[in-house]
Image (cartoon, rainbow, N blue to C red):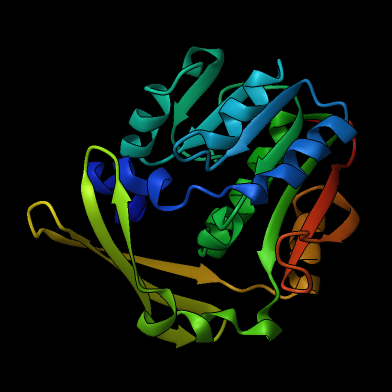
Amino acid sequence: MADAIFSHPRLAAVYDPLDPDRGDLVPYLRMAEEFAARRVLDIGCGTGVFALLLAEDGVEVTGVDPAPASLTVARAKPGADRVRWIEGDATVLPPLRVDLATMTANVAQAIVEPDVWAGTLRGARAALRPGGRLVFETRVPARRVWERWTRERTHRVSEVPGVGPVENWVQVTAVDGPLVSFRWHYVFGSDGVTLTSDSTLRFRERDEVGDDLTAAGFTVAEVRDAPDRPGGEWVFVARRSGTGG
């Protein structure tokens, strides 16, 4: 089940305005060009920001996401008819043959259950052509970034067009080994409604991710640094091994 921040219609509608700077997507756009990808599977496409940027460049894009509210936002955007939108996850996909599969932002870490994670990697491999690539990012656990997820550090009030002021902040609710749980709070100034969204991320070690990729039929081609978070994230570039389905 998708977190409320993605699945609640009112929260999905303000997701983009509350996070307007998507410079983190630029390296993925460059990798699509670097790998000459003309067909891309965007896993966890959310409100469709990255998928639509690719489509603007003439790329054939399939976006998959389990949150219907986020997909409703995506489908209402200009150019949305150029993207194939699928409600669901990458464990069960229609037949595809893409050059590149992506999981941007927190998508890879948000898949916390080991069996679902393994199924997602297998699904991505099945969707890729032989030699195609899977790219995604994951935060470096040793940086302990969650220690900065406090109300004092994250609180802000944003004026959202057509909505009014929205106050939001995040607080960690639990740390259990590699699992970090946290709660986003949203207060809508127009009517005083308060909504919350609970999330959990899995912080995997670099070798663990590499082993998972190998088990799913990938070869790790390289691990890059995230330009927007130097030293804080690994960007895995994995190549689909073998020729079978």
